[in-house]
Image (cartoon, rainbow, N blue to C red; front, side):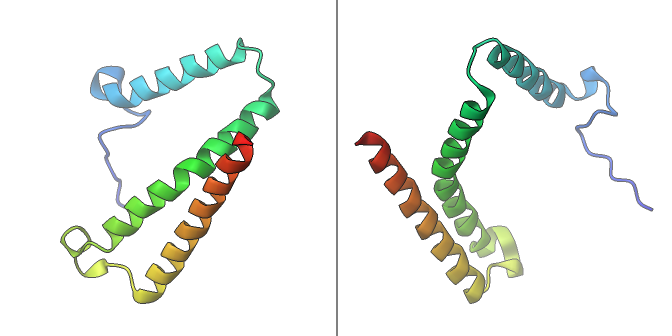
Length: 106
């Protein structure tokens, strides 16, 4: 079995993986701070789901643009079927995000 040695991971010491341990430290501190803010956990999950729903369409657009770029992907670009499904889902999610924002405003 071939081992993959990445530049980041828990098996490395702090001075070997600053970015990895920095991200873990920041996430831990933010979690600790959120714990003392007195926002109910289920309300926090609700707002996180809303944020994810709003952020998903632009991220999907970027993914589809990259996956169709032959300079980046070479011969492994998306097929026509994958593009139809991907763009359809992106449009539906984008419309849902817009409708969510419109209904929250009123």
